[in-house]
Structure formats: C-alpha cells, structure tokens
Length: 250
Length: 171
Image (cartoon, rainbow over the protein chains, first blue to last red):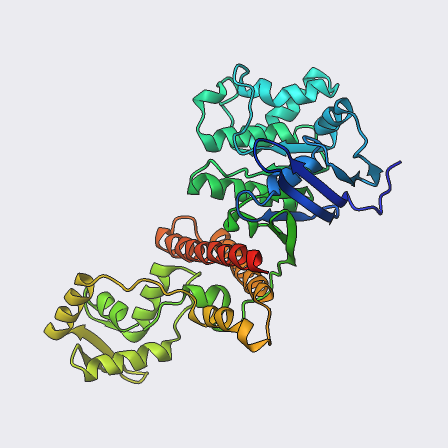
C-alpha cells in the first residue's frame, strides 16, 4: 500500500468553502502540494487567507469539498472520521495555537495518552514520555497541570504529545501564535532541532521569523498558493542580505 | 562609525587596534566587522576635526603607534549624540519605486516583484536566524542587534503582504 518513492504528503485540487452566515467564504481554492520526506515547509500569509483551513484538510480535521490527498502514497481523502483519528495518533502529529491540552490531566498523562490509545504498552509509553519531556526541558513538570504552566511550556507539552508516537509527519498550526517573542524563539529552536533529525514538518504561520526556520516557504493568498520558494543557506550577497541589514552606517 | 569610536574613547585613551577589538567584543560575531584600515581612516578624520587627539608612542621593534584621547569638543559631540533621537528607518524606497512604476512601463509585473522581494527577505531572515543560533548566548547586545534586524524585516514582509493583498484585488 505504501510506496517509499511517493511524497510523504500529496494533495491535488483541494477546494474548501465555508458556508456560515453571510456570503460563502472560499478558504481553499484549488491547491496542489507535495511534501517529501524530511522536508520542513512553512505556509505563510495574512490571517483569513485560508492557510489554517489548508492544514486542517491535510490533517483530516476538515473534509475538502473537492480534491484528493495522499499520505505516504495512500489515498486518504476517503478515510472515515475513525480512520483519521487513528492516523492522527500514528502517522500525523498536530500542534495548535492554543495547545489544546486536556486540562484535567497532568503533563505526563497528556503526553502518554496518545501512546496508550495507540496500543503502546504502559511501560514503553512512560519511557517515551520521559525521554521527550527531558528533551524539551520539562523535567520536574510531569505532575503539573496544564494551567500551572506558562504558554511556552504548554506548547512544549503539546509538541511532546504530538511526537510521542514518532509520526512521520508533524503539522503545526500557528504554534507560536499565542506566545511572546521568547516563546516563539523556543518553538523555532525545537522545530529546527526535530527537523535536523529528519522530522517532516508542515508549519502554518503568519510569523516570518518562524517561517524562516523552514527549507521552503509557501505564500498563501486568498485561498491559493501565490509563491513557493526554496530558501537557500548560501552566503549573503555583498551589501545586501544579513550583513547589509546589520551594518551600522557612518 | 565616527560616534561609536568617540564613545569607546570616552572610557579612556586607546589605539586603533584596541578600538577594533572592543567593538568586536561588544557587538559580537553577527556584526559585520569593520576592517582596521577603516578605523584608522575614521580616527584620522576625527583628529582633523579636533574631536580627538593622537599621541605617538615609540615602540622599539615596531613602527610607532598612536594613542588617541577625546578632546573637550569630542565630549561635547558625544553629549549631543546621546541627546538626539535617531531617525526612523525608511521604507524600502527603491523597491517601492519599482512597485509604483511597474504598471506604467509594461516591463514588470507587480506581483512578481513582490514575490521576488519576499524571497530575498525570507532568505535574509533565515541567515539572521542562523546568526542568532551561532552567537554566544550571553552576548545580549549582539542578540538584540540581530533581533532588531529580524523585527524590521518582519515589518517589511508584513508590508509586502499588504501590497500583495491590495494589488491582487485590482488584478
């Protein structure tokens, strides 16, 4: 079923229109996308451009009106709700702007829960949780409740929860959207670190600083891809780029 | 670089190479290092305008080195410098002119201009992130410099986004 040469994630002709009060909102208007293994892709654009809707379609949180999605070569847009829920524990990790932690579970339980639900033996789930929390600098917070933590810490718990089952794909929806500058830097550092170890990431953000951690930036406007740019890491041209921005003038 | 050099001399006399090292230590690796020649030229100009005075010190095996100190006029220039607020950063004039004039020339498309400019800013943003990651964590001044550059660039990117929103509606 799975084809190792296929992109990890592929979408063709995605369309999603929201029908609320007033005029219908065309959130996603014919979007195609390929993400290969190990890639870190950021989707940026103004609020209301439809980028979060796109991410929700890719994670099965919303259903497209038209179009197809393949995960690891396997057609996914026909999956049932139950199947998507299973895959969101196994193959897709998601972090959200407002963390979405279970408020009456401890930090440890929040992280272990998806592992236990995926059928991981309790001992192994605990070991995985310990390792991730240590990695994310959250040792000693296991027994804390989410409300006792800062926003940055809660987002790190959410990241641990998303990654505890080692999903091949991580989706992040404005993960620094409710954090201060310091929390943003922290999220950026962690995403970069997981990416360096081979984690495939699709990140939706309006924050260019966060987006610049990615290898590839897709600019999303009005439900469509306006530009798709691979960032290079070459030396800056003279008098421009980073050194030009930093230089103090006489 | 004139006033930063004057400011470094406010602590006490120093020679050109010392000033270069002090500047490097203060601003960190992220700051494009001025070459020592540039520093000597600036010191020469400052001396000519009477803001500093140099004194040649004889060295046995090497050419003389010149140790500079601040004059009263130099102190006054520094006081004025600290008294004044700095100018606002300017909108990217050249890009703006291209954007404004493109439709009349028929030679360039506004949306392509924006996309290309955005790519450059994003690449620069990426370089700045890397500089920040590589910089000594304890050098706060250097980190503030990089963060300032990133926030300015973020504002430029936001502005490009606004341009794109407005101009796409017209098309």
